[in-house]
Amino acid sequence: MNDLPNAEEVYLRYITEYDDRDLEALLIAYRDGLYLFLLSYVRNEEDAEELLMDTFAKLAVDKPDFEIRKDGSFKSWLYAIARNNALMHIRKHKMEAVPLDEGMVSDMDTPESALLKDEQNRMLYKALSALKADYRRALMLLYIEGLTHEEIVQAMGIKLRQLYNLIDRGKKALKKTLEGMGIDDARY
Image (cartoon, rainbow, N blue to C red; front, side):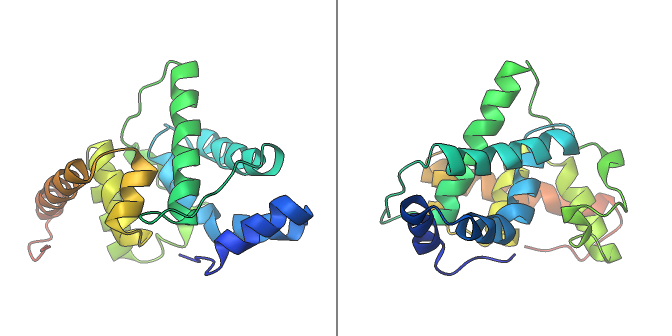
């Protein structure tokens, strides 16, 4: 996705100088990946979009402190904020965090439409949607968003050992799902 190489500096400049262009640069860089991440928590596109905006509204209004951590990054910190927003939303609306419905994949002009351009990506997205939510989140953050293991741990709020288990089980489940879809050369 479109990571911003100096995102920490952009955010710190935003909270000191209040230049909306900095917040806009962060939104442009992270909206697509965050949207897909949030969509993995909630059932519909409108809620995911609302949570995306809530995440950036939190940055704009609350201006939470960002501290560079040895095992984290701005991106994983931002994803942790988004995750917390999603979990609060789920609790507030008494929803269950469930896998995406197959019917949710559409050809509409949405942030994920770029990801779904060719048939292989459609099949992969469909297979990912069939996985347990935690498997899907871990695999998407690792392979699609390119976060490190330490960043994923921070973003998902889990322990490193749990992440290794999620990734291993997720890859096995993904392979089995792809094979069930007729893709016999699926490997990890």
